[in-house]
Amino acid sequence: MTQVYDLIAIGSGSAANSVVSRCAEAGWKIAVIDEREFGGTCALRGCDPKKVLAGAAELIDWNERMLGKGVQGRTTINWPELMAFKRTFTASIPRASEDKFKQAGMDTFHGKASFVDEDHIRVGDEVLHGKHILIATGAQPAPLPIDGSEHLLNSDDFLELDQLPDQLVLVGGGYIAFEFAHIAARAGSEVHIIHRGERPLEQFEPELVDLLVQKSEEIGIHVHLNAEVKSIRKQGETFVVSGTRNGADHQWHGGRVVHGAGRIPNVDGLELEKGKVSYNKKGIAVNEYLQSTSNPKVYAAGDVAATKGLPLTPLAGQESRAAALNLLKGNHTKPNYKVMPSIVFTVPSLGSVGLSVDQAQEEGYEVKVNDMSQWYTYKRTNEKYAMAKVVIDNDSGRILGAHLLGSETEELINLFAMAVQFELTADQLSTMNFAYPTAASDLGSLI
Image (cartoon, rainbow, N blue to C red; front, side):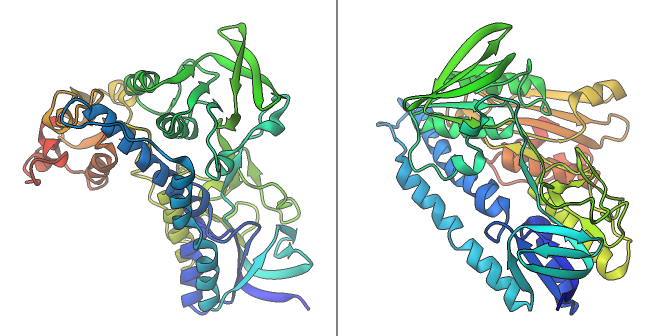
């Protein structure tokens, strides 16, 4: 007999949590399906475990900067011990996540979900009927047209490496590649980043990216631009990566080769056509309320949905909350995309929020540029790379965007995000008394 549910959620991460929790509180009968461990990408194999590793890289960088400035002796990373520490954050999540769902009265299913028709989902040998269906399956590594691509590790694999190779090759020049490169280099690996374009991290401010590349190369990361991988083959215990750089043939060698060249919506195997769910290369086609444009019983949230949001965990959570309200009360809530701060957790970190510098210049706004490397906040820890670019509307004084590189970026960018969200002016922010001496106390000088 087919089980009937008010809501079937496919996925158990950030994009699903608010939806299933709120609908369960409203008394809905809910099924949650995941083909992998319950808990989602961010908590298990993404943001959270990655930042545990990045924390160790920060310590190494701080130590290196302060040698001869009162600090003696170099700190090193013990990779197996670091990975064991990382697992203390992830090991309990699958069971805890599933228990939470069950305690709220939900049914949980392990397996690959696929549509049978517009309102029926198959998982294993069972077919479930859903009055509503949420797709929250996230993203997966984009397929790469490379001979020998089966030798590539993905980000999940890197975060489970028991031993770090002496040489590491990263294919791609985005978030994943640079974050992993900064971790691996601080842990003693010789790292190569191979990027097809002229500039990596293309969504960030070019001058700040250039400084980050300079820092990366100073710590031993080899950044190869205008380079393309053609094939990967195994030669003994080494992988030989063949391709071109600036049009000439080139080879790189590594103990592991990692895919860091982007992710795509994870719709494989869902058989969306059977469910009459339209999708494109950006993901499942949804309206402004996250409802499928072709099957009104279906909603989608997070990286799998074709929305205005960036593929970031807070945006997945934002969409999850909006989808929950729309399911429970009818379509009336739109996700908030006004402010989408993003961070590359390298060392130093790179951040961005609001209008880009190019947009600001096109629209006639002021861009205040500050090299902060000689400011007390950064000089006290001998930090060489720190810069900020803040976009301000001279007519109203409102802060419209900010672009930062430095050790304090991840917190400062949130203050600027708040300023953009609530349309604060430079004068308002300047009159705020922040604790001193802190990075926040520099805000008045930045604007």
